[in-house]
Length: 328
Ligand code: SAM
Ligand code: SF4
Image (cartoon, rainbow, N blue to C red):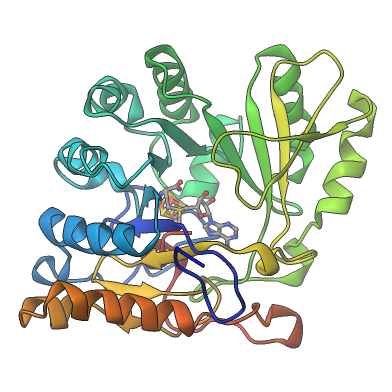
């Protein structure tokens, strides 16, 4: 068997890289109300260090990477990192997850650097709500500009991620779904996950089954579509629509048995599972001068320690790092 496999024989070929823990928004479901204790600049991996890790991981079997954060576009020179990663012939696909607020100006340079696609997080189409959910002075118009800009330079498909929260934005699922019909958006509805540092109430949770029920007035969903970079989402389409509707159900119907991913935090920890606190440090060993084969051994050890599944249903909640530090 060639490639990278965990101890449950799952192929691991996808690495999500958090390039910063900083963010220009403070989304209620992600960022603790008091903010985070920021990683010091000296502890953040340099772009060269990220590339060294990606090269080693690619030699083992990683072929796709996604840049995330915090907000990746607040890190200076992100397009330079994109260019470095795209230049690695062992990496097939480089993509980005962003809140979209800065994408209006960065989309052309990212495209030029070789970025393929973007996922944009947007949880409301209403200005007042946007400010409340993101606890920022940005406007939903900034994100809409980012979406347009990404589409017009060909960073496609542009996927819109909406975290659905009862009593906060769940009354908008139908408006988002309508955009898949009217404007060809690709919208993914994500179940709200409990993560470290946020005030999570189970009363805010909306299962995918309920989201689907709310979309019934728009017609019957046709199942079975696949998309580039297919991850945990299950995709559907309303009859005749250009866009798609995806559902991501980490809580009500977990997809751990098909999990193919690893996460690299901004301070150089490899995290085999989003919802488990275990991490393997790569930064200190690298800064102490370990060889490429030792680095690969650490990556392989992290992969071997990947748990079979998360334990949210049994009440185990990851406790150490807020989502903005792990990358989502
Ligand atoms: N700042 C970028 C953004 O917002 O897209 C990238 C980082 S963000 C942590 C990555 C993804 O994690 C976003 O799509 C966000 O909606 C998702 N996310 C954060 N907290 C979440 C939670 N508690 N439940 C579900 N998804 C969450
Ligand atoms: Fe920032 Fe993204 Fe978290 Fe919102 S979801 S606080 S934009 S990292």
